[in-house]
Length: 268
Image (cartoon, rainbow, N blue to C red):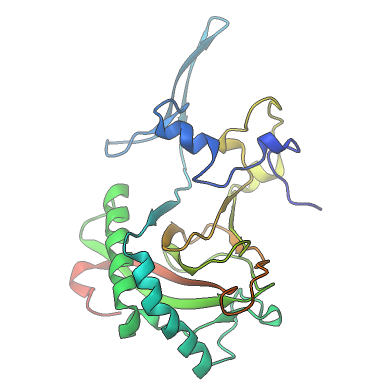
């Protein structure tokens, strides 16, 4: 069976977040709702709607948050770490198998990149962004983020990752080192089993709101860092770039983050 989306109407299909129409509306201050952060009991609150004499207030709970950041120093960082990634593949061409499909040429490095000097700059960036995320969400400040493992991925033409989650960790992320045209998007799927089992029918004359999407896509933009809940199901589309390797390779670095007591941060 084909994967379900919000509607067969192209205008109602999931947008490529965060560049979609809804995100642009949110930036203009006219979005239908806003995340009220930093306040006790913060929720995604929709302004009251009054129609046909009925006033209805909506509050959204159990949100699925995805964070992203385009690193200003990312292009220079990518120039320095790309040779290190290829050197790792030359030393270990088989790599390890996780969700990467080796039959399609997808390569997955060892999990110890956070301990390698060549990647220290990226580790600092991830750590700083994870600290901001932890503070924004309101985690106990006695516990800080710790990168528990980190690895590189190289996807040549047709390379991809099967659908999966990251067990036994809190947050996961990906950073894009190289992304040629049509390199393949990352897909996140609605984690609510019952919502997926029973889909509503939305109006065909306007975009479907985000709460009606069944999946959301992010383009692999070079120097972009994504952070998402480790339990959120995701996969990577096949790299369909027509550029020859190595310029046509899709290169990314993935990682997992846990909470650790501040006095234990020196130990991994």
